[in-house]
Amino acid sequence: MGRTLVGLYRCDDGFVLANVGDSRAYQFREGSLTQLSEDHSLVMAQVRQGLLSSDEAARSPERRVIYRALGMSSELEVDIVPVALEPGDLYLLCSDRLTDAVDGAGLGGILAKTTATATEPESICGQLLQVALNRQAQDNVTAVLVRVGP
Image 1: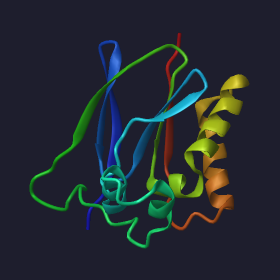
Image 2: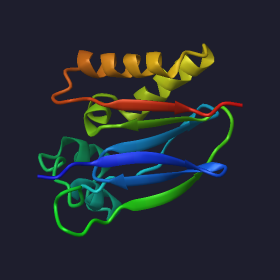
Image 3: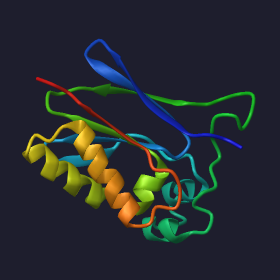
């Protein structure tokens, strides 16, 4: 049994993103949401190879099959990506169950509305979790939000 991990480490004038599995990291900058992490799942590998569309992957019965995770083997391969910061950026780290319940457009919409009103990160996470629960999320839902100050 394996566990997924996504994390940010602050260094110098940026972050270092670490990712293994299918938990995700997103950057919300100037109204645009970008997925920074890469899912290590069978269906997303098939999407990258052009064998499945994103819609097909979302409906696939194999979408939970991951090929990289903590505890799957004695050797661990982790994606490490440097991330440059800009004031006002939001970074969302979340479990796959949040992104199952709320797609990228939905995440971006929630983040856009809350940044327009300067809502605190804790409140934004609460809103994201509530949407996931309202949509019958099937497992634990985790969300952490980091806001870069001026």
